[in-house]
Structures are given as C-alpha cells and as structure tokens.
Image 1 (spheres, helix red, strand yellow):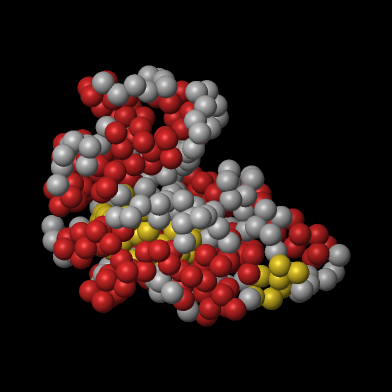
Image 2: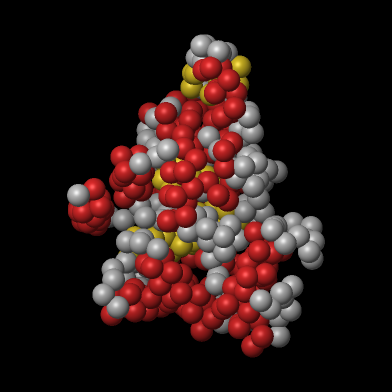
Length: 366
C-alpha cells in the first residue's frame, strides 16, 4: 500500500528531462542520476532558498492534459513494479494551471493517466488500483475552492478522486485557517487527511484532530513530543537516543499526553515517511521514532512521500526500516493491514483489499 506519495515529487528524472527539453524549461542537470541527486540534496549546487523550488520545476512541466496524464500513468506503473497493490497519489491542482487548464480538466487528466496505468499493468499480468487525493495548500487562500473541486469530482471517472489533503508548509500556516474547506468536505461525506506533526509539533496535531477532524495524519511524527519520559516531554530530534539511554539506566517511564492518547485510542493513522523525514524532521534514520511510536501503539502506515525527491520507494522504505529497527513480517503486516483500513475506499472495497493483502502475506510467509 501507499497512502502518502506526491505526484509532483515522484516524477521520473528521465521524464522530467524530456518534458523540460520539449517545453524549454531549464534544469540544473540533464543527466538523470545527477538530477536525482540534486533533488535529494546529495548534490548541493545550484543552491536554492527553499525546497519548494524543486517542486516548482516538476510542476512547471505538468501544465497540459498530456503531460499530467503521462506522469500519472508512469506513477502507476512504477508503483506496481514496486509491489504496490493499492496506491493514492496526491497533488495540488492549483499548481497546474499555468497553461490555462480548467481545474476539472486537470483532475480528469490525472484520472485518465491513473486508469491508463492500471490497464497497462493489467495487460502485463500485474494488478494495482490507483486513486488520487486533491490537495489544498496551507500557504494558499484557495483551499475552499479546492475542497469544492473535490466534492464536485468525488464519484466521477470510476471513483478516481478518493479524498482530499491539506499540504504545504505547516509552521506558520495553522490548519484553523482552512476549517471552512474541511467543514465542507465533512458535510458532503468526502474523506480527508491533513499534513500535520511534520514541521510543527503537538499543538498542530491537536488542531488537526480536534478542530479539523482529520481521518489521517500526514506524517504525524512529532506527536512523539506529546509523550513524556520520566516526566519530561520528548524532543523529536533526540527521542530515540533519550529513551534508549533511560532504558539502559533502568528507568524509562513513558506516558502519553492527551493528544497522543486521543490519536492512539481512536486509531488515527500516521502516514509515516521515514526516509523523507530523516533529513528534516530528524537527522538520520537512526533517530526516527517510528519503532518508538509502534511500541506506544500508534497506528502506523509506511509511505515514500516523494519517490524522486527522497530517492526512495515502498520496498526501499521496508528495507531501511527492517535494517535499522529490526522489523519483520509481523510488523510490516500490521502496518499494511492498518493501511488497508486507512484507505479512502468503501468498506466493501477495503474488505476485498484486505483479503488480497492477507493472501499475499500468507504466500510470502509460506
């Protein structure tokens, strides 16, 4: 499963180079490997003021029906090749209007690309279901318009639009500024997730679950800051080390705060993106609190976030988590089953997906 993967962050470098050449868009590198390494920060030149400038390059070449559909189609094929049987890709239509596309046409282009990708995978003997989430941006005033677009698109094009997301810079852009958009979705019965607990802390999560009533938390990693160790709040940057040190000393009393307890008790899924968050939220995968969150009984799902920007995939996330934290079949099966329940599918579709997942887990474990 993949529930948190940005379409404009998963554009193949080869495709980006080709589309940029066709459209006269300047890129820092025309070699796929170098371009990919620049996106991840391994190559630091040319410097940029903010990471969002990199997304500006990918969205700049996705301004027509054809290019949007192509990127969506390739997203499906790559996800299926990585073993994904169900995936939701999210994107912000407001960033794809530079060529004059109407909003509904842009959404339909993604739907067409996803459908074509599914058909190509099926023709090759594979199987995958792909859906899209429409994003509003925290830093934009268009979230209500994007919510209206989601409501109008919901149920169309073979149910391509599965739900909604609020994305973008979290710190300084509180979710309370977008409550009218989320209230509209709730009234209309359209599910939504919200990026929270990534660039901001526990209070952002509190707003997201208690004011916005989000069904899932995009990232949610900094909910660990609403956990105390021997009476003192944890810091996301040092939580793993601090708990390990306390355990070695023989005294590690962990207690959930009210927000953390609420999230645990109501099984609000955290869309964990370990590689992506290991170069910003924390520094180094060894400092990511995913295993600590699991031990505290948070509901976790595993996601790539941005396959190209983070140079990762679902299978790579699994390998890295297994190598660093010792997860095996049981832990991954738990996360995958949680992902099935967290999908924005109907109950009947979730039950069918769960049966397919269980069959694959049994086959793998045999």
